Every structure is written in C-alpha cells, then in structure tokens.
Image 1 (cartoon, protein in one colour):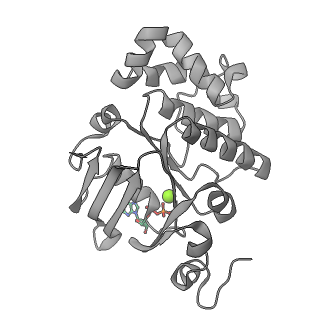
Image 2 (spheres, helix red, strand yellow):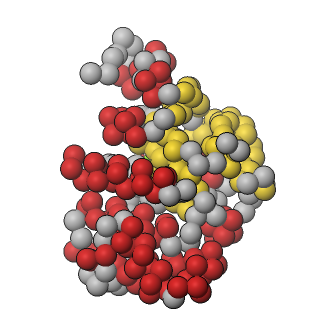
Length: 246
Ligand SMILES: Nc1ncnc2c1ncn2[C@@H]1O[C@H](COP(=O)(O)OP(=O)(O)OP(=O)(O)O)[C@@H](O)[C@H]1O
Ligand SMILES: [Mg+2]
C-alpha cells in the first residue's frame, strides 16, 4: 500500500497555545485510519490545517506526492481531499439533492457529472448514503443521523480519493451510529481512503484497523485499536492516572 497523505512535523499555534505540536504521520492508500483524542486534543485543528482552512506555523503536508501545505481549501478539494465538519454545514432551504449537486459542480465532481448528468450523479451519491428517499426534502427537517449522511454525501460530490470525517458519530443515537459505521465501511470498501476522528471510542475502535492518538497537540500512539486502547499514556490522557476503559 502506497502513502497517500504524509504529514511531517506539523505545528499550528493560536497565540500561546500549540494546538498541533510537531505532528507527523502517514495515511496509506485505501486505508481506514482513526484519530482519537480527548476534547481539545487538536483533532479538528489538524483536519483544518490538512484541508487548508488554517495555515500551519511549520511542517509539511504532501498528498499523492504533491506539497499541499500552502494550498487553499478549494485547491485541496481539487487535488482529491474532501472533508466533513463536526457540525454539519448545509444549505438549509435547498433540497438534499440540490445540496449534493452544488458539491458535484466542483471540477472533480464535474468529471463524473459530465458522463452521467449532474442529477443522476447526485442521485447516485444520495442512494449510496441511504438518503435517496429524502432527495426533495430540505435538510432543515432532517433528523441528526440523516444530516450526518448528507454531510458525507456533500463531501462525496467532489469525488474524493481521501475523505476526512470529523467526529461523524457525535450527537447520534446508538442506532444512528451503527448506520454511519456501516456507511463508512462501505465507502472504504468502494475504494475511498478514510481518515476519521472521534472521541466516542467504542464505535471508532470497532471500525478501524489502525488508529493514531493525539493529546495536547502531540502524537502519543499509532497502532491497532486494541493496543492503543491499552497504552498507559492514552489512558491517562482520557481518564487521568490509573484510568481504564470499561
Ligand atoms: N481558532 C482558534 N483560536 C484559538 N484557539 C483555538 C482555535 N481553534 C481551536 N483552538 C484551541 O485549540 C485546541 C484544540 O482544539 P480542537 O478543536 O482542534 O480540538 P479537538 O480535539 O477537535 O476537540 P473536540 O474533541 O472538542 O472536538 C483547543 O485548546 C482549542 O480551544
Ligand atoms: Mg473537534
């Protein structure tokens, strides 16, 4: 498996606070990689820096061998990285179909839309995420689990090679979490490389074969979930000294 994303010595400071601290890791092509860390660990900031929403103070990010460190969010989407947001962003009064069509207008989306037609392409994506029955409904009336699916559908509209999912399980019922879990697995099986953050450990750890752990901006572990969950430093980061997951 080749490397699709290489992050080297990445640092992002907000004034005196170092949110991402000399952080290095790699994502392999085709992988489903998890990122865990307690509240405020720096997970969202790491996603924001990778996707160009924040500029790093130092370090490099390479995607498919290309240095994307100083690129803007739209350029990064055009290279093939899409993301979702911790709080789903959607055009609340457009239909779900139109929300996805907006994403399909991106250059990578249009490459596919040109072949099948934009309505058809957006419909295929809505079917893939299980929302085709809600195509004509505006997101404002969707339950939370469906809104998450729509967030993923919008990210898929630009036909990504690498998908970053920021806390896709948070705020969902257990049943909704299981549905999202299944969807993520299915997308990964269909060839999308996925990097997924979370602090709901049970769902995330059951999903990914490899996880990296972050605490106070630093990488503190990298390995299979069962190993990382038993790492003393990871346990302390979450639960304080002597802590143990149930
Ligand atoms: N724009 C900003 N300006 C100042 N400080 C920020 C900014 N964004 C994040 N931070 C701080 O950086 C640190 C990391 O925050 P971040 O949101 O990346 O953590 P997180 O791991 O995603 O947390 P959560 O699990 O709550 O989503 C926190 O201390 C946060 O307060
Ligand atoms: Mg976050």
